[in-house]
Length: 533
Image 1 (cartoon, rainbow, N blue to C red):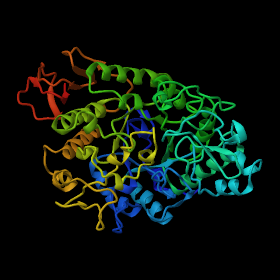
Image 2 (cartoon, rainbow, N blue to C red):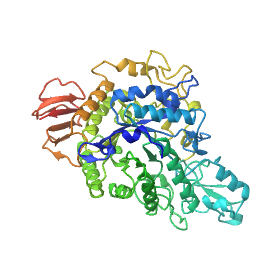
Image 3 (spheres, rainbow, N blue to C red):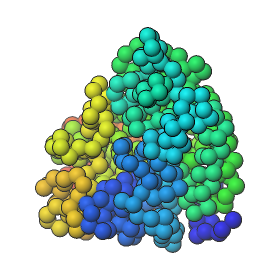
Image 4 (cartoon, helix red, strand yellow):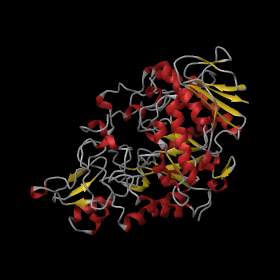
């Protein structure tokens, strides 16, 4: 097996083995990060050139959203070839260069893996269509005869996440299952060839030196036997609230046990991170038992509003659920699928103030934190994109999602006073707002009041202090209504989630504040402060 720089990177952080336990991981959405060739689309070479920025920011690892060969029906989450790079992003040589340069800088690379479904242009699926009903390739997907007269009705009542039936009929009369877009047929994970193929894909990228995988729709691989009807409409409202016949089935855990065996074959602590929408933190913890995956996204925390009581409950529930399985809790505020939290928290100055305070809260909690590209710049959601530029497939489906995911994927502003703000020389695939000139990396660098410098300072302090990130508990302190206060060693974090300033006895010397205090004994509205006790 080839040795990589990853093998020489530290495998321990804080007080427990495993670099991921306290890591800050930065999500790069390749289309929108940096464009190196002027075609208006971000690419791998653009990422490589900007790695020093991420090193300076202070993160530990970089998660890359899909860059595989794809027709781009769902922005690359419809994969045609899991071992090839889409030409819009570059070549396999470019991917190798990103991994090697990241390692040289002390950064790890996590790649997205999409095992629930592939593209309808995947060679297996194209051959399955050619071969017809009852043939071996069709068994690798969920092909079924229809119901009703002449099989004209879908095999069951499941709905697509993007709206409409989760089934599409092909020319020979059979139907195939796709929990997402029709261009994304679901694999049948009961078929051994599917399991063998993905273990091979894991090894392909691990041999290239990647440090792990973010597993898309990790909760969706196994479907209930017989594919039973759900028995109700508006199924999207049930996602993340209860176990469904197509999500969070217990059979997924055997798959991840086999993957853990593969990951453990490699030096350097290679990890698996589950995107698992489950009904509870306890259900999420099942994916993180010692012989399964290493981390899972904490969507229960992401979905919690800006309210002290609700946040405290979410923090306690998350820590309590992870403790029995020995896994670190993760914290996340935004990603490529949700409205940016500046906007979720109310938008404008108040939304930004809350987002800055939320960042300090997140980075003070024990476990691992995920930062979505641009949140360190305080970017808001772009809510006024013209319909003609939208590319999110859910935007085009009746009764699907609201179709606003394009708004969190607008390319980053790096420099300059006019679009595309240093993103590239050929414009940007989604238009950037005029006000982003003041939010660019260049505009914020060196400004102590900027959100970028707040993140840089917070990440620097987090690296310097063993109290931050380590452990699996917080000590809650007495605080006024609407205020969170907790201690970790000789460190205290206070967060005011109310719209009014609160008088508070300083617990020590202020290390960092999300907003400059007008009075040292006053905790401002929507403000967080870190203290040295």
